[in-house]
Image 1 (cartoon, rainbow, N blue to C red):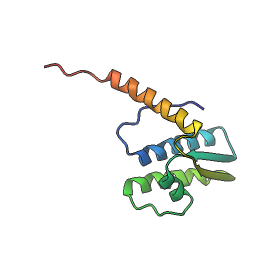
Image 2: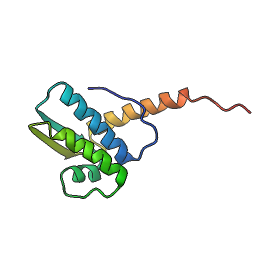
Image 3: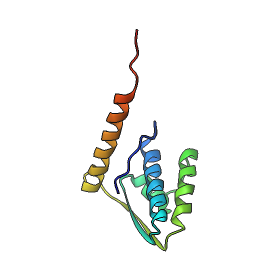
Length: 111
């Protein structure tokens, strides 16, 4: 699945949750029963597996949405993968492509 959109200014962990939520929504739409989620944020992975609590109020909202969606699957796994993994590098390249397009569309200031 190649799906990308500009989401504005977010922290890395907020963006990770938003990408996960989009993937889970897509997986729900296609009626997937089992899902494996590859995440490069160790914090998000450990929050989703219950190893870490979620203290940040913004992340907690996103965590609740992700957990709610996760409840709709028979089986869900969260795997933390290093940034050097080809899947993460491909995702980073897609992010950079979207950010480049967004920065090109910004109006320039005239003085």
